[in-house]
Length: 391
Image 1: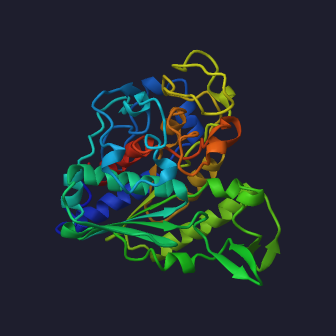
Image 2 (image 1 turned 45 degrees about the vertical axis):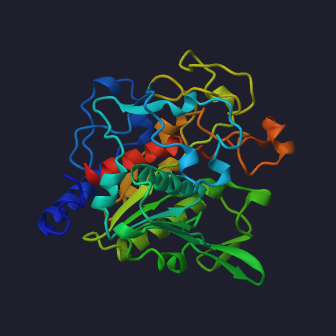
């Protein structure tokens, strides 16, 4: 039974379900152990918080010619940086893969069902451009099932909203790459590691919120989104980035614990989305379906085989894991890191509308191996999101 199917009628069951989720969240194992354990195939499947016996995030990619679930030509809301087919990507086999958990079948995304179950509600994605990647994917997935339904898109900064008017469903994206607040002080951008109210005021009242952060914490130089960090009244030109991220995430966790009413709002956190800038991570052993000699994801056309990624696991996930374990309110970790690490073929590379012709001619320096093509991998993230909500 889905989370929203009994919401209006069974508050007692909802209380039990959410507290079961809270108890299970406290038992999250070390993520590295979870994916590297050599006895992985012989262990009992992990019990998910939605009472399913399926370990949704452990599995492999399988060829399925019924995919993709939509065409980019039928979804005019995809940003140029994600619209790989429009911007010249010559191959399409990367669109033909489906995520297969080890011990169950993942429900196929049904946009019509999503509209019915989420009628009158608000879904909000909060975070960086990976959250925007997933937001646009969800819009396209829903539209593919209801192409004639009236809609309204309002793009803004930091909030963009997409409304399915007949269903009174709003799907929003709120840009907050660090989650915590950034303020201008004496002409300088100050990242306030213990302040979140300016952003948080916009999140209160949503029925489902999916948060993400990660990539921006390691940016330097012109990519850095702040001039100073502030913590405890002291200002820093820099500090250990992992420590800063933990401070910011604990501020977010405290906000959730104090401000989220779990009887009406479901909270998700999207695990760290991996990048593929170092081919030595995947050109080892025999698990790769294809081998290339490029310096990044450019030219990759197929996912990794098998269930594990030979490269390193993002150290930021240790911080995410620890912070979520310490929270009082239930947060569903959408644990997409490992399954996404296997998709070295899914990035825009040079086929991005954000790149100039000169940049596209130099893939070694310009390829985008951080974001994901649409259609593409974020559709699977939303398939898992859909499953966690309703099954």
